[in-house]
Image 1 (cartoon, helix red, strand yellow):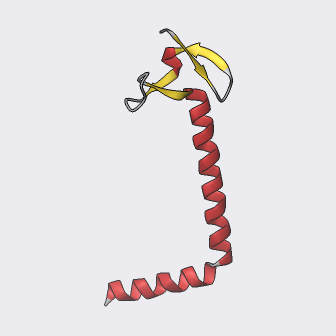
Image 2: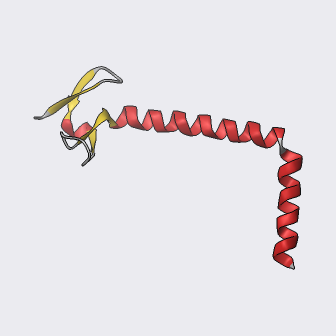
Length: 75
């Protein structure tokens, strides 16, 4: 088997374009490297935006907890 189909980009690609995944029967990832990287970036951006949103909403509480923890460490 020298090619594999990527369901995300719907293209038949060379087997070398897929990451090794020993959990899969074929020994390769289901998605090609490019699609996998795109998904990781998208997920990372979503997580970071949620973290920023949470921090903005709870900034005072987070800072206060940081001060309390710093005092505990110094004592």
